[in-house]
Image 1: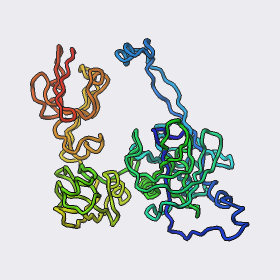
Image 2 (image 1 turned 90 degrees about the horizontal axis):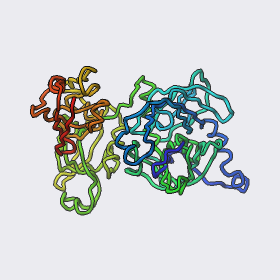
Image 3 (image 1 turned 120 degrees about the vertical axis):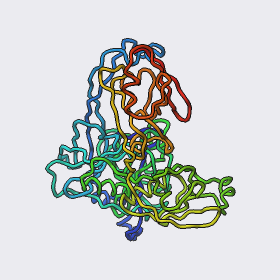
Image 4 (image 1 turned 45 degrees about the horizontal axis):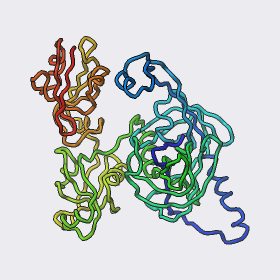
Length: 457
């Protein structure tokens, strides 16, 4: 089903292959039929099934007691089904879809438009990017679509969206590329950089194809902007360049998407800020904080510098910077144009994985202790990236509160300060400090504020 997050995403494609308009009445009468015949066989329907655990509270949906006793009651297993679309990317059966269609699925069935069926498994998935790469079992000589470089896409290009909306069967809709470099438009877990289209897409189109008039894939449908649940002509897609990076990592054996680590925080430069920074016009991303291990710091950049371009392409939001880094890939270097005090400068920034240093020294409390299952780690770049924490976090971080910790209000990302008035300095302090019976008080930092928890163990 298509992710409805008050938006539906669609990917738009570039025009680097030669395009032309119909030159005869016969061609006009044919419309998009030849293009659809060429591309449709590579777009598939996906049926996914996952097993989920659901708490059966005796208080049902009671607004007060249901919240107070949300962890009380019998846990039951139920089957959750999802419906979406996918695109075949290679002759041996590599398929791209959305993570929210196939993520954590126990069974995936893929149906081609000629009704052939295949079992599939996930090679690589990433909830943050909402992309997943699948492999069809025992597939060969499959029809597939070629990826088009995303930076060749232009606003106004004709595009087709192909998918399985509402489960009615493969459907084709047409439109144009309405906008480029849309960021901050998707909610939920999908974040980043999108192409916008007005081609009608609906629930079930998720993971389907957005193609140009040459039959090349320019994006993967992801979400729409909607109030009713149906298409309002504002859809979003994940660009083909990011799909290519996912495909390359999946084929190299990665089970988890590896994105370069920036180690910075920043904000878009508006009119007022541009004057303060000495820029002639709004645009770019000003760095507000850099981690000591950040590759941007290693390249000589400082807080207050404004990133204007990555690899010669303008960037105006933090998600755009991260997108450009992601499509560049770990192990390579990106050319950064930035401004300092109104003066233009250049730097070459290495694309690196988040360093796992100093050692995280992870500790998990066993079932003999009151907060069994509570996990902590020393904050380092790898921990910060893995748990999506603030760049400046230091100290001992909760990476999993465990069932009892969650019940008293502890959350992932809380920094432990003290237990019963004694400072928490090392992860090895935690079992000893939390292993005592009686009333326990925990002092923690959350979002820069101190919070206090008390419980009787």
